[in-house]
Image (cartoon, rainbow, N blue to C red; front, top):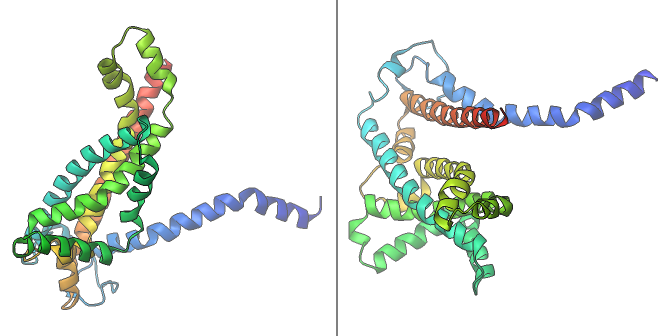
Length: 274
């Protein structure tokens, strides 16, 4: 073989791997910058990418900026409530769409994608108009934010759980019923454990979307201020470095949950194989 042919063959064999690594680098470089800036010794800066010196003070006092601690807690509360509601309703809707035939099923599948395809400014302004028209215009706050977040989280929950249900082997449920399990026992002992990873994934995605949302929240929050709204307001004066601490902490928590779930899944597979 000629050297040129060997080079072409090596490139062809490693092209997909190289592209995958480039995508990972492109994805994680901004996260790495946020992690680095969480250790930046600067009270606040309009240019948050200027690293001055190393410090632990940002981590020791993550809620030092006035008002930020309450805004973070409010965002977490909203995300937890919206995630719980959207996950329950979305999971039941996914089961209904996948397991049952009914009139308008195709239209329902189309409508599910509308919140995902619609610009956030359109959805946010539409929800605001709805709240005003129904008399909630003067009571914008926690409840209206939760309702708005549930609206756009539902689509992601339904799509995620629906994908898990579609790939589920029906023979497993039929085998359980052949072994004299009734419908309730089959659901809780076979169907639900198999669908649970999809439900957990949908819940994690919903929490991230809710905690991170700004546009829809800003239009329907009234006098309440969430963490993304705090960051937007602080950007006009100078972003405190503790913002990067909160971002890093949320990222670490999310990665930890995913890794624990993956290790648990592999452990169960090894136990079953043994």
